[in-house]
Length: 197
Image (cartoon, rainbow, N blue to C red):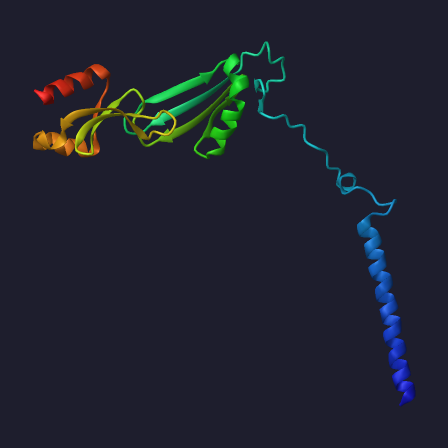
């Protein structure tokens, strides 16, 4: 019985030594031996030659940025009025606008609409009116004139009137709930003059 236990311990000792040797070899390989090769060399992988689309001076065309005629443009389509406004950044604005451009692109609303040599256009759609329109709405019981923010489409009050909304006829009151859209300031003045008389 004593020899059986002794043989059993010997078997465990040999198995443990083999296991330690294997673990040691694995660690040596993981830590990198001097004769090991880079996996990139083994697979034939080479780094792609990728240049960024944008640089501090605008679109990377590979040419001298001072002589470049490249443009960066933002195209905003306003759903409620159907208008599209395009703003192009000229050479002077581009250098200062790179931070703003990165912020705008981070908002996830922008998509790449056009990419060609010398021209980069980003587009987004806003479910609102463009800033060319005036919207007359009820604000706290009085008529107020609103305009849309060009970047977000959110309405902000431009001017509040002293005309009470409840003094208007039923059709005009109903239209005020959604807002009465007027194309220009002259039209707004005519509308206010019309309902106040």
